Amino acid sequence: MNLSYTKKVFPSGLKVVFRRMKSPLVTLNLWARVGVKDEEPVQIGISHFFEHMVFKGTTNYPGLELSRQVQAIGGNINAGTSLDTTDFYIVVPYNHWEKSLELIIDLVRNPLFDPIEIEREKKVIIQEIHIDEDDPEEKLAITLYHEVFSGTPYERSILGSKDTIAHLKRENFICHQESFYHPSNLTLVVCGDLSENQLFEKIDLFFKNGGKPLQNLFNSFPPLPKVQRKRIEINMDIHHHYGAIGFLGPGIRQDDFCLLKLLSIILGDGIDSRLNARLREREQLVDSIHTNFSFYQESGIFSIIFTFANSDPKIIEATIQEECELLLNYTPQDIEINRAKNLLLSGFYHSIETTLGSAELLGRLDTIDTIDTIFRYLKNIQNIQTKQIIDVLKKYLDFNFAISVIINPEDHR
Image (cartoon, rainbow, N blue to C red; front, side, top):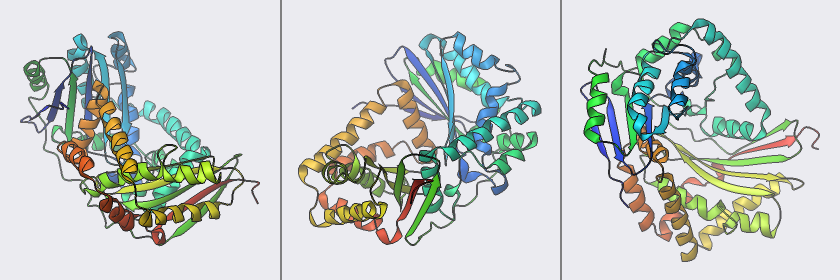
């Protein structure tokens, strides 16, 4: 596999990652090292709100003009906020990459933060919060994260709360920009078929003056919790049952994250996985079940998610626990391990087939760890042995510390 790239740090502190790819499209993906974990408690949700506000007009492109400019050159523009990061991307035909570079830099450097638009957008975000509150899958995920990461910034909702959003002012956004959008806190990833030298020369013109150095406003991450087993039941106006079991896991800087990705596939990815084979196909306790390991800079969460109609959730949970414990005695066969390795590698290769997929992978890794994690990850996957899977199962999937969340219809008895 050829995943060659160039990384350069400019005098302003800006980090640029370039991957040359034979494609008619170019992706420019700008990453900031700021997410929910870096927010003050009274401003939870500001990173996501900031992401919204930069699209409401800049000094050079007021109103929706910047989005119109992107559309006029055949491009797509979007953004995202996570627990650790905020990023913005533009995907365009390769002959318009220079204009796109100008636009994506203007987006985060010169936002207007119009007070009238801020007040309008508050209503939009509060409506998003209401929608999530009414969506059982979102409610399930938010509750699970809040409990598993209890006592740390990762327990927070990316959207914030109605109260924190309502109190944000223009000066809060200006301070957020000055604190976290200095070039030394940014990574720009560019993937496409263009000249590396030309790209770096163009970027250098935009960042001759980096401005004031970034102040150290990042809060230290508190010790991770060790929560005793807990079970939460929520009633909602729905017609189906939703459930989840969550375990605290490692962050990206620990090699165990790779083992948990593989364990997740063995347990609950596809019809041949152990939980699917037993709970859905054989015993028909659930309508669907899958597992996932999501990793972040400081920690991770291993989740088992399921839906069901008439089964007893306590029996479902007990069966899941029994199946996980059976894995200790009936260890994964070579065919299971090879299947999991193949699916992991296939998913990785698919993710880097496009310029956007490549930019998102390289950018996220550079922001929360290092791009070299890719090569460590690929090597670790190929060398995983059965004993390592069993060890990581014992270490992290301890049901004495499991968080269970069940969402039932309101008329459920």
